[in-house]
Image 1: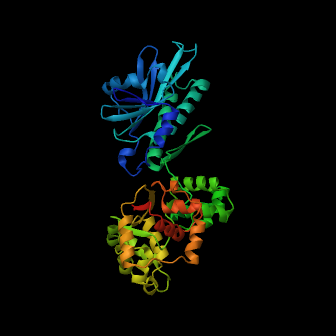
Image 2 (image 1 turned 180 degrees about the vertical axis):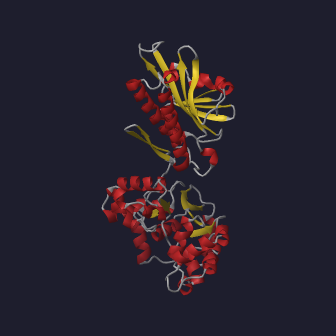
Image 3 (image 1 turned 90 degrees about the vertical axis):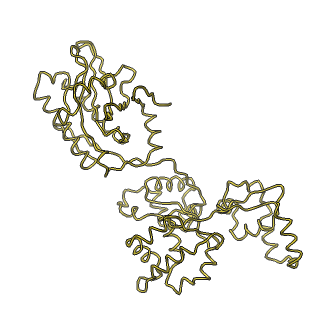
Length: 441
């Protein structure tokens, strides 16, 4: 369902708010424009109409400005208890209007709305749970003590409301959380970071835990995480982790997905010496950042006693060109002689985005335009190879493979996991099949 948009107003129900959370990135809390500029409490007075009961700080919203926004702050009955965002007069106002139907009120109804005022460009989704919780607390107070409807005749109640709103504004801006105390009641308020829920995790990917994972108390993790995390080293793919930890594959996939969403893990391509890696534009960060250089030396060295040189690590990344496999690169550089751990070097580069793996996607075609040239070259330059035991074994293992799986959407790693073949066996099979070409990207 699309949010209603009219005159700069947007209304969202709870389902729409959840959809928005799936499409937004985490709010930048260090940006001063993301802070709450003002909290105001509005009501519909039975004689005066819409009015501001109190606002902190005082006079932040003028009477002229309120005259423009009051139709949206105290809206019609259809918009009650929905998040309502108004972008007018150079401000963004987020509210949660509440209506109480009761014959004890002058017009048999009482309207109020707690509103947060922000900079016009602020993403306000993370503040919606706070407004709803604060509104529900004030609703409870109104139903039990008539705090809101009688504050105009009771200065003590008005001061209580003002202090409540100011405390919430100051503490949320400072710490992004607040234990708001109102008498004997404590209301926990917190700005929840927003994560991207649209994360896809596949069984052929190799998850690796980031340093942030180890900053949490292990007793807080669920049983599945505690079972699988020792095997999440960036080399074991998820299918193998399921086997090693004796946990159902579906549970492992869902657990790893949540760890990736919470930004404590990454999913990488499976490490293989036959892989081709290429540097990304982020490689320049390694040349500029001394801190990243020190981290690279610490992570990529074979030993802490005799560490690798940063220049050798950078040179190894720079020579990762298209077409050169990691195995060929190791033959050229001899990383062991340079005290470089090539496995950790690749892992470090992938985690920090310094390099990427060039994926291979087999595609089945009716006619291979390149096969005739290959046949001619083979007849002229090379003798016809004889069948040996090894090639016969590969043919037997790949006998059940259908070319339908080579549709261009499945990578070599994914096909290896689904068929149970090693990458070398699958590449040998593809080299024999003249109706399959391999795309690299």
